Amino acid sequence: MNWSNRPAWLLPVIASAVCVIIAIAALVYATGQRPAAAPPGVRESGQALIGGDFELVAHTGETMTSADFEGRPMLIYFGFTYCPDVCPMSLQLMAQALAELDEAERAEFQPLLISLDPERDTPEALASYVETPVFPENLIGLTGSAEQIETAARAYRVYYARSDADSSMAEYLIDHSSLIYLMDRQGRFVEVFPHATAPERIVQSLQRFLQEEGA
Picture (cartoon, rainbow, N blue to C red):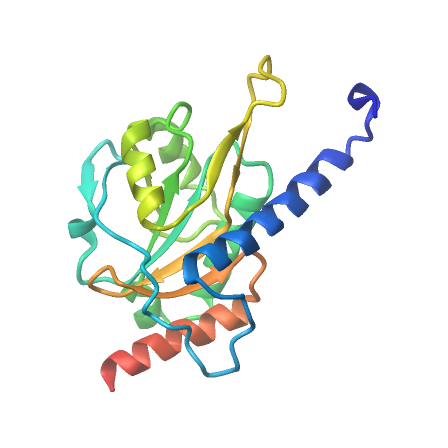
């Protein structure tokens, strides 16, 4: 195919399809089993070896570690600000789910975006990005050195790779798994929500998590 003559809509369609495939593969890798829809009212197993310590730089310029978030359950998404579709869609999904909670429930959760593109995602770039109106309120963007990002991504079993199909492209893409992680107040894995999970499904899981904590 002559890619210079490709239809304008083709690349986003291919990119979205690839990201969905990557998300499914990452879910299999993270949980060590075939992905299956959980029955209503059943939370995924918390025994997967997902999560761990990290030290990154927030969009405010402040160095933050995983210890700074102890005491609050986290909703974590790994992505990058130049992502054309899947990342903003996932952050909007997170925002939609949080918006369905009541104010007290919503205040319990800390949403985080961890960049997979430290070369372009400076704290300044993240500061502008996290203020996007359709993203979650109080979203914190985290970046760092390539080594710091790699450490965090490895802890969460995140697949990512820079796409250099055309090395002359200034606007390169990053192939990555697209998952929202729910972590408890001690930073332990609770559940993972693959790309395009229904907001209602996430709302139910978040409310169930809070109810089981208070039981």
